[in-house]
Length: 269
Ligand SMILES: Nc1ncnc2c1ncn2[C@@H]1O[C@H](COP(=O)(O)OP(=O)(O)OP(=O)(O)O)[C@@H](O)[C@H]1O
Ligand SMILES: Cc1ncc(COP(=O)(O)O)c(N)n1
Image (cartoon, rainbow, N blue to C red; front, side, top):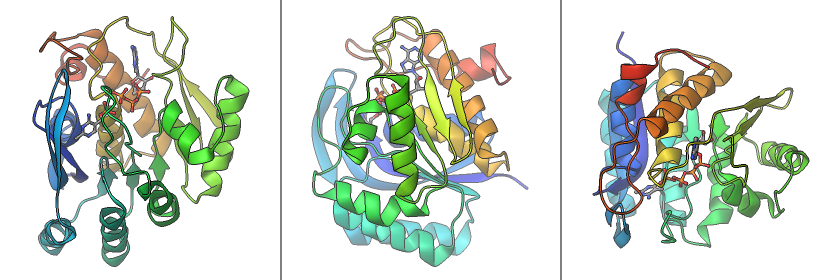
């Protein structure tokens, strides 16, 4: 059986983040990729020049078309933009009984553009996060979702505990935004164990789409039947390779190298 994964996210015309990063990642991990697009963005490595959200009906129909014919073994959400799209997605996850749900609570693009309306944060917390197998906030997103400041490792553990109370089955709080100069360390928590996932921090500005790529890699591994922690370990290895073997495309924050994992590194750390 060919594993199939679905991404529900925004399109990045520049090809480094969003739907484009997700489908490239699925492909590299030998998973058939499908997409439901929540918004079109006019975007490049310099920033986001325009955001054009889809109608609820457009999102609904894409999800129905996929569900009626193609059963995804895992799904991820990225940019959802507004409350009513989150509600639509949550309803469809329940209607179709989709499991292995990865929620990347995308809020703000690197250049500062808002990819989620402020009033949608509550809907994300109450409607979507409780349906998720794992959520993958970066540190600023975890701060918004918990209302606490995250500085120390102890803070991050406390935030992970608070996020689990929202109803997700597990959480990984990514460390890309941490001030550590030597390592990029992510924290996994599933209610029992805290696991720190370490990687060498690469000094580069070519990190556009790291979060999307990381959560897409988790989704691809879940679609193949891997457990959550193994899926996250592979995703960490995938993103490490993609940042390390940079491409230098564009004049701003360039995309990561989605070929690198296949080319240079096949295993988990
Ligand atoms: N400079 C870096 N070197 C190595 N790994 C990194 C670097 N930056 C981020 N990572 C890793 O990439 C993954 C994504 O983390 P990050 O915190 O950057 O997510 P994000 O904020 O959602 O992405 P973005 O900043 O692109 O929006 C994590 O596994 C993180 O540890
Ligand atoms: C359509 C879209 N979705 C998400 C992101 C954030 O990307 P990331 O956090 O992976 O850099 C983005 N810039 N554009």
